[in-house]
Length: 437
Figure 1 (cartoon, rainbow, N blue to C red):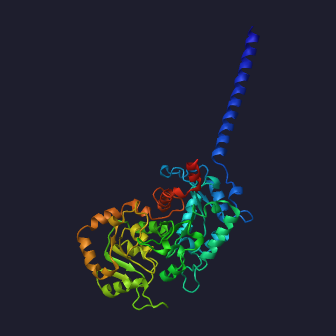
Figure 2 (figure 1 turned 180 degrees about the vertical axis):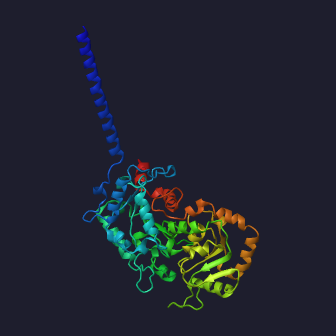
Figure 3 (figure 1 turned 30 degrees about the vertical axis):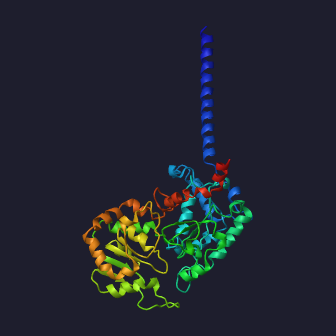
């Protein structure tokens, strides 16, 4: 009997030993299967333009995604309700090749690069399956062709480059043709948006190319009256300022530190017109500022370039933001981010993201014809409600809404762009199909 009892114990022990191994193997198989289902690799066969070489952008994305599987990823915000964007993989000559010049990703027009990068890194919003996309982002960099004469971006090639990209995607995918591009997104971060010219009269004459008129344009140009260069579905976005430059400046001089300059402006202020058109830069507003206030101790006006100008902004109470050739300026973003009250002198300008940035509470608007009254206007504000304006301006959420980050953050400029796109979901072919069924 003892021998029989020991045999049964041995069998029981062996049974539990194998049972534990089977259980362990089952759980391991379950978790591995779940991992690969929820973290499926980039379906290159669906994202590659047939017949084209794989772009550097997509290779970088693939490596980035696989290296960060175990890191926390930005979640699809509940406010966007499963918004999905497909980013076309174009040959590198449309985008990544331009980055050989470092200015391409850091100058005032670089929002075209910043938005592309942010979308590439926003895993839950970006889809690799174009059939589940609400919108299609076409990443073409057209403002990185810097002139060898004056260093300014030359955008004469913009129309042909974008037209070529559209020809490529419409020939290799069905998505452009089914809507004539109405659910496709482009960035036009230039003086007059998709009119692609720095001079307003020429921009108006050229107009927006027909092949872009059905699409959504993310553009820095915006006015609150009818204008041919915004006669298209569009979202007004801020010009690009590198967020790291703002952080570096604020590390040396805090936002709430001493401000010993009352009124600041550094930039082009012509005494006489110096361009072939014979026109004054900025409709002569800057010339008037220089003539009236150069020598006024309240005004710190400088006409020369200075690499460390952000250190002057953070010391200033009021910062003048007059129009140039176009009404918008990158100064506006810098002034907000560095806590200097923007004084906007550009009649009819449409400012970005008004639902997130209450412009009337953080800035002043002065009519172009009232430049001669600037001194009195700013003296009055300084004696009355300056502290209230500064309190509103120094709210971290305000500057965050105007800055683009490589990895989207809640409330930042890319977040605001997506919020604006969500309001345009009536242009989504996928959702219109669902609602009609």
